[in-house]
Amino acid sequence: MARKCVPFEVIVHVPDNMDYGRMQAAFDKFYIEQAKKILESSGLDKAGKIEIIDRVAAQYKQSKRKSA
Image (tube, rainbow, N blue to C red; front, side):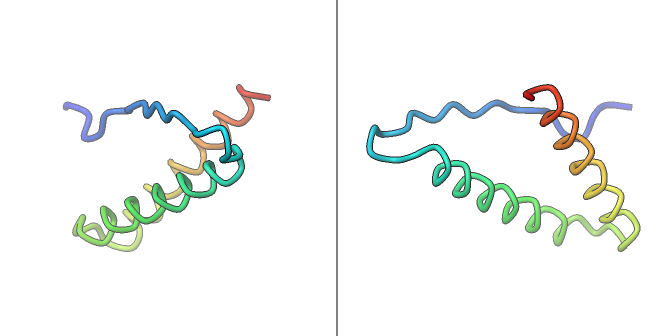
C-alpha cells in the first residue's frame, strides 16, 4: 500500500530584522491550521484523528531529540 503523505521540506529566507522565534511561531501556527483543515475534511472518526495527532506528536518529539 502506498504512503498517503509524503514528507516535504520548506526553505525560508528570513529578513535580518526578523528573529527566529517569531518566524518559528508563525510557521507553527500555519502548520497547525493546515493540519486542522486536513483532519476536519478527512472523514476520519474521532479515534482516527487522535491516532494521526499522536503520530505527529511522536515525530515532533523524535525530531527534537535528534536536534538536541
